[in-house]
Length: 306
Image 1 (cartoon, rainbow, N blue to C red):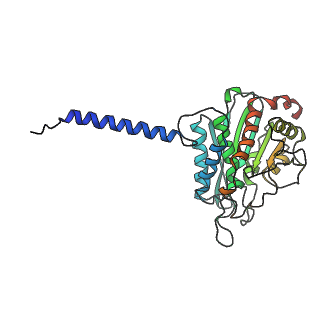
Image 2: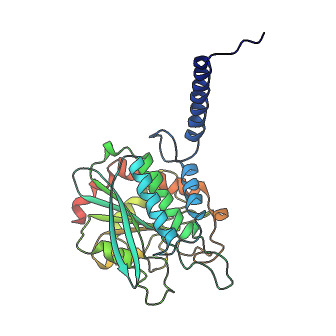
């Protein structure tokens, strides 16, 4: 005669199995870059590269598009996940709705801004291929988001804003103000300094000093890069003058430094994809910024920049 289990043991067995599978799923999720329990274990280029890929999976992300709005939401979600306060500034350009987003940390002291842009150029090239903007767009976002996770904000000796600009990447759009996000941000704001990033994830990059940047701020960053072992990426040489979002900050009289590869050959082309992004490059830029803000280096030059 076959004995039939009562309902209670069956329910208990189901509950145990459910909890076990749930625990295993939680462990697996926690192993993915950018997910799971919050860890303050230093900047990780591998995590940053995963964030680049997350953006590129959405396809092109020109300002005012659904995809650009999704990236803005992703940025806000990641910042909030790691405990940063967030702010949003919406504005219109032509008939498009754009927005700058930011993470805010620090309670007192001068304001240092680290900025990048998150929009990309047009949806497709002339031959119909998508413009993914892996380096020109996604790389700077990935560095700032991973920096937000890695930073120990308790060490900050000044206020810090991580700013993600919209409306920067599409100079070929009709009647487009290419630097609209930077112009909007610089209106009625006077931070002590801005460090702007773009094209920071290529294989074997180099970041020369910009001739129009603030000499004191730029020199301090490049000297720190040398002490960290990144002198080949941050050479003591001056590169060409380029027009990018930092131009608006300089025009507004804000002390500005620029970390950018000025001659990235694939910018604004379909070839700017994730295959050409190197986690070691993201790591170098991220570690430099992490060390700079955590160790209070800026405070030693802040009085001279006023």
